[in-house]
Image 1: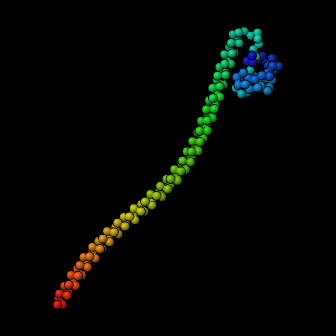
Image 2 (image 1 turned 90 degrees about the vertical axis):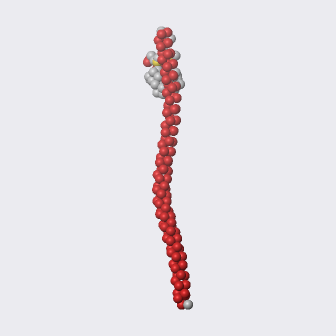
Image 3 (image 1 turned 30 degrees about the horizontal axis):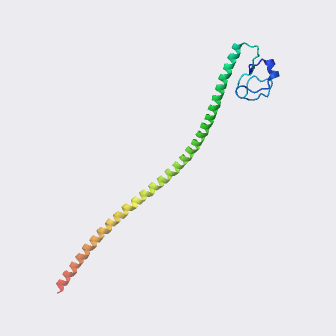
Length: 154
């Protein structure tokens, strides 16, 4: 059972995989697994059952923690990618917002100009209407004057 290292035995027998993550050990003088950080310890067969049970429970818990950590790292990686995508989208949307705000300001200026022209047109229409009324009045007065002059001549 590869759990506890008797450092002398480990140098001779370390040809196995980590009991937690399955990483194969390359160095003979390794004390901790480089992948999951499990302390490499070999328990001899003559060790007490209490010691074996203690390290078996410790191994079980370390495996659980290692698996949870792997899952959390995957979730963290996915979340980091999502955050990166959201930040890119935010930047794009901010850029579009600036463009649209600029376009809106231009459109508002143009709308003000159009409203001003519309007011000018309405004022001009009123002036035309007033002038048409004045022309009618003057035309009628002119007719009256002409008729009056004609009456005087006769």
